[in-house]
Length: 130
Image (cartoon, rainbow, N blue to C red; front, side, top):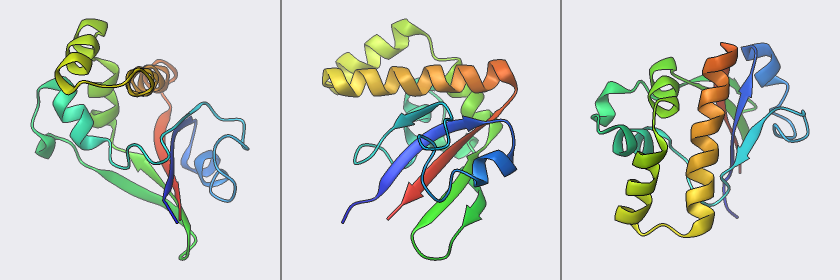
């Protein structure tokens, strides 16, 4: 059994917590499906931004059912750094890492999701389910 991971945007921790039971898609929140692809965003953001991963604060638990599902809020500095990544850097990263088309689409979608969070002054969250 794998780990299901989605990144999503919500206007508050309370709104994000409501996504815990079924995931952000069922809650009609903007999200990017990263199941089986990326669990931790800090390393990706560090690579894309050229910064050290230690500059990012990880995440903070918003909700956890103690068994299979949880929601974490990403730290604002991580979201801001991801939102700031330019298209040229995404293309360069994709070439350097020999990314497949679906991977390029997901990295771009994650960046765009971060931009939406910044634009709306909302949080960006990670939903996980085992």
